[in-house]
Length: 212
Image (cartoon, rainbow, N blue to C red; front, side, top):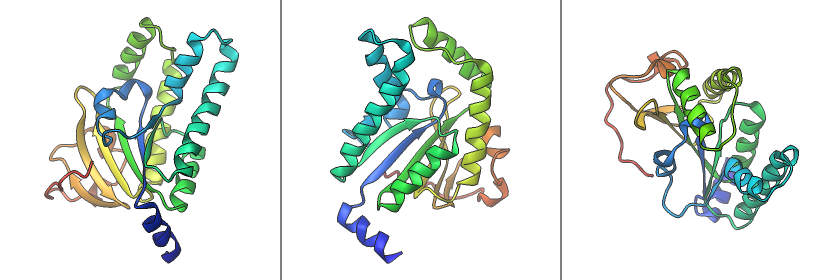
């Protein structure tokens, strides 16, 4: 509405970039999709730093989430563009993003996934070997499918949505603005073809110049 548009003008179109997907899929290439010098808030990285300080493990998640919210609030108070990393696998996170959108921020979601759950589990095992936290394969599967279902449900909500396959390299597969498809790759992985109404996506469409 007009009120929201006026707020966006005052914010100079501040963006909230959401790097979304299972943690094991989010790598440096995913972070590079966000404009340079954009602050990125990642509660998992905060938790790593807290863990190094010797804090009891039972308190780490609570402390890291609290610190992440503090950093997020600081960016919002300054009307800064910023980024967060999340698996985007629960309704509460979606509602949180939409609430920020209602304050005038444009929400840009960079969603990464893969057809192969074993890719995820292998990367998690490797990450655990290097000292990171382990995630049970059952939890991985639950989050994987929940993330796809919720993305399908909220598909038309983000101001900009970009889908990337990260099975090997990070490759953009599709892009939409408020649910309207702007770009689609010639060949799509099954996690996109089976999760979304693929008939809605035009097969031949010129890829727009990236704004990120």
